[in-house]
Amino acid sequence: VIRPRAYLAVCGPGDATPAELGAAEEVGREIADSNAVLVCGGLGGVMEAACRGAARGDGLTVGLLPGADRSAGNEYLTLAIPTGLGELRNGLIVRAVDAVIAIGGAYGTLSEVALALKTGTPVIGLDSFDLPDMQQARSPADAVGLALATVA
Amino acid sequence: VIRPRAYLAVCGPGDATPAELGAAEEVGREIADSNAVLVCGGLGGVMEAACRGAARGDGLTVGLLPGADRSAGNEYLTLAIPTGLGELRNGLIVRAVDAVIAIGGAYGTLSEVALALKTGTPVIGLDSFDLPDMQQARSPADAVGLALATVA
Amino acid sequence: VIRPRAYLAVCGPGDATPAELGAAEEVGREIADSNAVLVCGGLGGVMEAACRGAARGDGLTVGLLPGADRSAGNEYLTLAIPTGLGELRNGLIVRAVDAVIAIGGAYGTLSEVALALKTGTPVIGLDSFDLPDMQQARSPADAVGLALATVA
Amino acid sequence: VIRPRAYLAVCGPGDATPAELGAAEEVGREIADSNAVLVCGGLGGVMEAACRGAARGDGLTVGLLPGADRSAGNEYLTLAIPTGLGELRNGLIVRAVDAVIAIGGAYGTLSEVALALKTGTPVIGLDSFDLPDMQQARSPADAVGLALATVA
Image: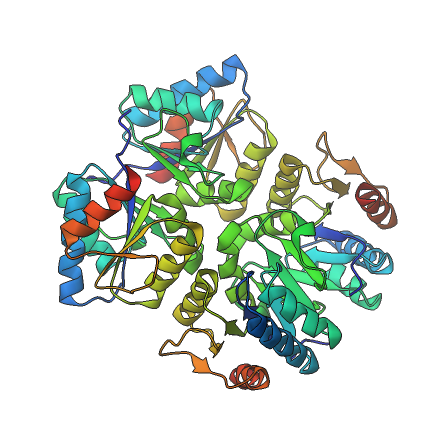
């Protein structure tokens, strides 16, 4: 069994701007190219774009879905896992990963960032929030590089 | 059975300043005097001060504890409920209440504020975060008044 | 603040027989008369009957509801707490209490009994399952007595 | 992205008999050979044996761990996902899958079987419990065949 190099969350809004979607797709591709696993909330917007990028790099993607219905997951998920926890699944995403990459400024994303900072999981921001304990990335590749550097 | 008028969360740091503790105690007292139930994370700092205030007003207080040990709850809790969920119990607090009163600026508090805003639960800030969809209170009494106004 | 003597769960089907409902109501009354808190799933059937009994004894009742809607709770609850966890709230009920009283033989009840036995929480059966580590009660009063004896 | 044919849980004790371990390993191998994903609690005993079998068939295995530490997962997991939910993660396993294969008779397994039956997820028993709504398998291959038949 080959172990993944790292588990990285990509958190961002389901309703995203073109710039956010583009950044998310690049982040996903970089994660796949780094042999890391992408974990996300499994739905659309930033989550789907990141998974699409990872899928193009033949990466492994896991969606922890809020509802109980697997079919709500986006089409680029390797594994679509219904949790039935609603927004409490945000906390599961944080627990599942070694570091969080946050894109954009939605409240769901903020809850993930805050839980990660509370529990000591590194958070990298990419055009997202600017909180004292976050690291700020200059580009998608930089975001993944900073995230992997926290894991090594 | 007499139904509580409202369920209000008081969220704030376990390690708090004297000003935060004083505000929390007043908020707790106002909640009790309004015949509302105080829900919190059940530990020390702002949580304990709010419960102390509520207890002085003979109010009902519920602590949703992160661990599995009831004895970790502060001494002013009417009900100490171990959840064993760790920081994911923050999401349970938000689900349990009609409105959230946030005091101070800790990451755990931020996670509760963000989850509440994400799910449409009203959030009142008292010397806390300043996010677009929050209401800002001028005093402890104002905070409880604004919270109750969202419930009516 | 007066601490409850014990936290006891009453678990049983939402769709119950008259005998189960009668037993549940007596159990609830005995819990209230013992100054213990009754914790349950907050819905109808055995849960509602137990709460009705406790309410007649002026006892405190807590319903941990599966959905996100407080109004789904039965009318005899002192505190109706929506969790939004669906059937996973069964595990929260088990964590919240010092002992479990199981009535009847539904699958939801069985999940609570099994989780309790797995985690070392005492389980008292009243015309319910007969598993090796459970105690069997002869009557509602006996069930509450056995449950309280495990707490002392 | 190639979607898994099905998600199947293998539930059984961490402290298992040689016969249970042998059955679990065969079940895991059959799951992998069927292009299904094996989901389990991620620890030792039946969980580890099933993952070992799946790994020998180059199958994908997911462990939903009770604690917050990824390293507690067994060495045959493709993905080791810490949940920090303790025994409540048993409910997550049930939600994640299309059908449950139960091996042996431990209380944790019983909680998974009961939650699955409560929520309408098919349960196949292999020398395990005998509850009315379960199907009983005659062999590991039969167990996986029956589980896949419920998904089609």
